[in-house]
Length: 468
Image 1: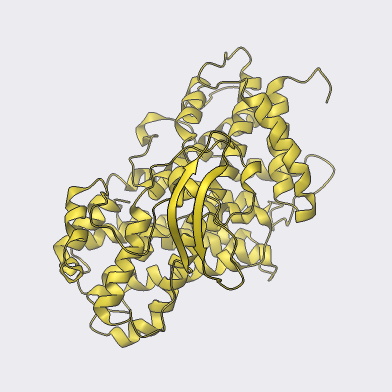
Image 2: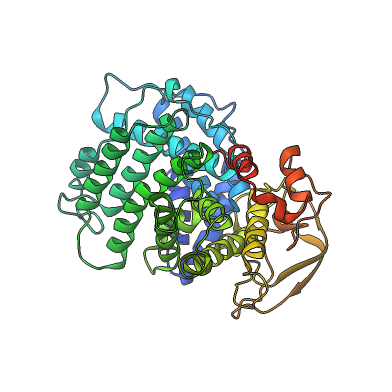
């Protein structure tokens, strides 16, 4: 690359090349290893917190490279340690005034600024869902409008090649998908504070259905993925809101075919299908990468614990929940696409594991025990046979100095988990003296498993531990 290019441009190009190589065939991955090494070498000399903003355009390129690389990293890491980069990225974006909508300037620059900001809003919402922490970006704290799909259509015609898999309006499928999750992020920013009206929910549903209509109706894997993903945004919003409805006891002892239960089940079926559907690698950034199925799982577990027609529910939900939890646990255990030594930030830091996922597995076990599904041999072990024995000691070079692992073969997968700092100390059973950080929850989990299923305890669990 010519010396005339700024270091910010080099960072952006390296981020694009690296993530592009990782999304290519395995034979091309060797290229990405050199790219990530060069990226780290350059970026360690740059600090967003103290980077001088002399050239706004160059600084935006630096931020773009940082976000692209770390979004890819977040899609590969366990969800509760994937978003540590966000506070710094958001602050840097604010220093560039990306949270203020421009009233002048070229339309392309304006849309680039909007796209960057709304990608950060989207990641902030996903971080809130994954961790249960309050959002960093608040609805009243910015004026930046949503990016325009018209802008994507106009700019897709600039250049020598058409967009990949264009829709009827010459839009790339990925731009339609991205616009869909920006729309959900926009709604959830408001709906986290107060429940929407029926008209607001209906308007969101119609908007998403209009986006679905922009995706070609052929049966290619990419288009099928995009259409299903967009429809999922409706179900996902309803599940997040529905969990709050349950806290208001509006759905106490709801039937197996009630709207909220059917929606949760539909969301999880689509989530499972998209997680296994052959499609373009970039889609795996979203599912099973960034998108979490927590609310739908809690709704079904809550429902099953009070269900009067458990035979019907066994057919409808049992295997589905087992598969989803196993899918998520597999990801938390570190079965990722990129080898450890080539991931960004090769030095390990011991992570404070978020207990929400550990609790989710424990809740499933207790519900199964209550309804008699635990010991008949039909259930799927969500831990896939992994047993951790011994302590993980992580050195400064990122190499594990001591680790004892007893691995049972699981469908031919018997490789060692990679995310060692995260899975350290995890086991099949809840250890009573292990603190979740919530005294109320510790009290519930330390007691008799059968005492959990009082409605007020479910309500407390949902409101305190799964607030979104």
